[in-house]
Image 1 (cartoon, chains in turn blue, red):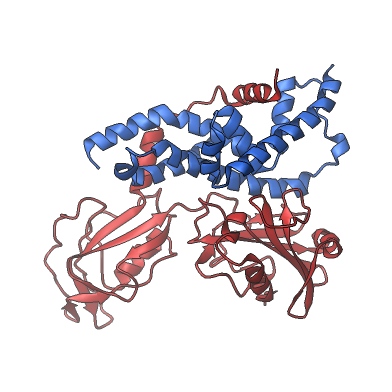
Image 2 (cartoon, rainbow over the protein chains, first blue to last red):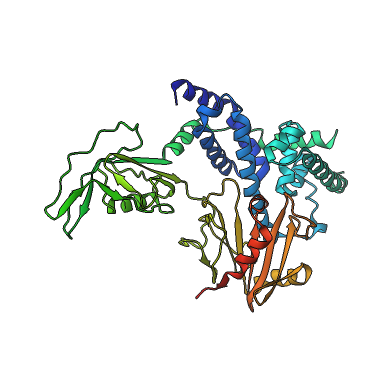
Length: 166
Length: 300
């Protein structure tokens, strides 16, 4: 690794790591400490191949590692939580003092991890359907349908919530 | 306002304040450095009698290959210096143990310890040269290690991870190693779980996860027993299905379904085995689940 490579890597980290951490938190619902660990791990992979990939698309590579690690982390967490803290749907409405956006976020968290990742990539990161599909290793059609189903679920639950809020 | 925009605002509100710490670059590089230990087999001594011998060896703690050659070979009276030794198998060992094993084989370390406190717990995932290969004088030995999984360690060190929660796992698909974490009571009271991944590395997801249900927790398996497609596991009854994240039987495997097999080992002891959607693309999930299930027995 040349000095120039090292400097470029520093620049890459300065420009991208905050965004990677935010995505990790949104996808797996981790604390920022856990997210940092996840991002460190992804960046270490990037660093290992840096001279080769720096001119290619290191960001897409890093994002792919982060998102997939976050989904896998969220899946485990979800499996464990679902059975331990499963609550019947009729008690699912959030308490009325929650702001609408907090309530929305709660609904997002309750979606299956992959569906949530689609929504985060599409609407938080503004990634195209094709780019989201590439990051998640699925077809653009799957992204489209998962996004639609995710939004529909949130909308459906929000109708109830909004009723509570007003 | 469209729900997409509201959602983006909600996400902004949750993470807008999060900033990556300025130390991140340093942490990444430290992590990277801790990954590779190189040392040169500058001299190899074969101990021929049970006499403590000063073994001459040199270590290059990760610097360039042009490290200084070892100190001149010396030998105790009852030892002979040979030109090569056989490389032991150190994969799967903690770095500290691996270095000790390489030493015990006749290669040694002359100079600072190659194991820093922060890397001592890392696990060797690859080694060069391979186990059984003769290591000649001056040859480079490279051990690559990986950070231990940070998952919960409810059941402690499980060794190869194949015996836990009262069961023994006799069969796992080739290439899967214990991911070095374990959980207790996450799937109901008195349940135990752990998982296995290619090379024990779960960066890209787990390969196989196993949950043991004991006592009261077996009710979860009991419920699914009638509701899911049944399968014969040896002479046991069980169920086998692709299960959606909502817990329903899916018509076909997909990115959000988990291939699942479940059965009772005996009264009040049940097991479920999952293959992740990612790993399911690499293997015949149903066939592998059956084989894993058939290989599970109550631990002795």
